[in-house]
Each structure stands twice: as structure tokens, then as C-alpha cells.
Length: 310
Image (cartoon, rainbow, N blue to C red; front, side, top):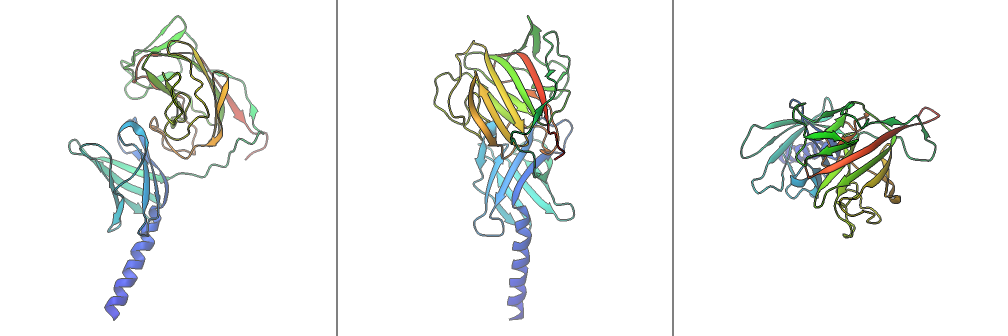
């Protein structure tokens, strides 16, 4: 009887520890100059009905985890690759973070740390005021921008006042970091090409040649794989388009070619473009350059501030 009680008590303790995995996690790769950050959501840990979602699988979609489990205090799952990569993490009670590693069939394991996604109190409630606009691109050179990764062979040029990617370029990021803002961007995407605009280095507004295609969460103007726009407001490939993006806290509004297609929708977490995992901090503007030719011009950011401290 005592043995049965002891086993039951141990099981209860294990389940109590398992619930610590529940929640949303911003994941930092622990290596030099990482160009990707991951995101994990766990629910039902400590019960037979554990579920999970992950940003970081091939393609960067928001994926349901099929084989998520917790055994002996370790949370494990694999991704959707033909040759799966294995993720394993333990909860560190003293600091409240996840300590993990990703291993694949080839290559060195990648260590990572997961931090609980913070509560962000800022909301787009109509009380935010505009500061002076900041031109992010001077139409002359790459002043104010750097490559994500090495600083060599960026794959971008400035010609006739336009910022151009060959289609095989590194992502560009601003040297400045920003919190709440309005962002105006004009772009021209080539046929069958796509790109993206990273907000704070975390949340991607999709750029894509998809004139006339059905509405879904990957089309032009979508918050990539997370928020489906209300309409397809795209112009044809080769035509200049305009995106006006408003971000306050996690609340995003997107106006594409003069039509508002996302209105004050809450961003639940990182998207595939993310490399800066800490959601409670300011971050750079990012331009994707490796998915086909694209041009940008007239990139202007207007910071937003609140008249009363939050």
C-alpha cells in the first residue's frame, strides 16, 4: 500500500512539473549570429491531451506538432522534414526558461533557450500620437541598413533611387530598432517572386505575386501564416504597390494599395522571418531578399508614442 501511495505521489509531482511547459515560448538559438528564431506553444501539458504548435518547420508555417510528448521531465518533438530533426527541452525551474537542443540526421546539434512570451500592455486604442517621420532609405545607398548574417555579398544594389534584390540576397535589417510605429513601404515584386517585411525582426507582412488568387494566410499583405487578410488587394507583378503598416504592441493593421485588409488584429507570436526572439523589446525593420527579385523605394517609419506613460 505504501508503495502504491509513493508511486501515486511521484506521478502527481511529475504531472505538476509537466504543466510548467504550458504557454507560449520565444526561442533563441544559442550560436553566433543566428538568422532564425523559433516559437513554440504548448497546451494540455500534465494531462493526456497535450498539444503544441511550432514556428520553425520547413517553410516557416505555423505547424501543429504531431508527436509532442513529455517523458522524464523532457519535452520532445520532431519536425516535418523527410529526415526529421529532433527537438528536446527541459524546464529550468530556477530561471523559468527552457533549456534545449535540436539535432538532425547530419550536422552539429543547435542549442536553444526558450523564454516565456511576455505580456505586452500596449494596444491600438486610438490614443497613440505620431512623432516625426524617419526615412529609412535615402535612395542613394545602404546607409542605415546591414545584412542579416555576414556583411559581405549582400546581394542588394541601389539604382535610380530604388533598392533592388537579385532574388538571392541576404535579408536586410535596419541598424535602428523600433517599437510602435507606422511604416510606409513601396515595392515592386517580379512575376512568381515573393519577399516580406519583418516588423521588429519578428512578424512578417508577406509580399507576393498573387494578383487575383484566393484569400489565405500567405498572400500579399497577410501576416505570414497567422492572419488572413480580408481581401486580395494585390496589383499585378511588375506594378508598384504600397503597404502602410501600423503596429502597436501586438496589434497590427495593414493597408495594401489603399485598401485596409487587416484591422487591429492581435499577433500571437513570431513568424518565419523572425531572428529577434524577445517580443518585449524594440527591433529592426527587415526586408527579405532570397525568394526572387524585388524592388523597394520610399520606406518611411513614423514612431508612435503615448501622451501618458503606460
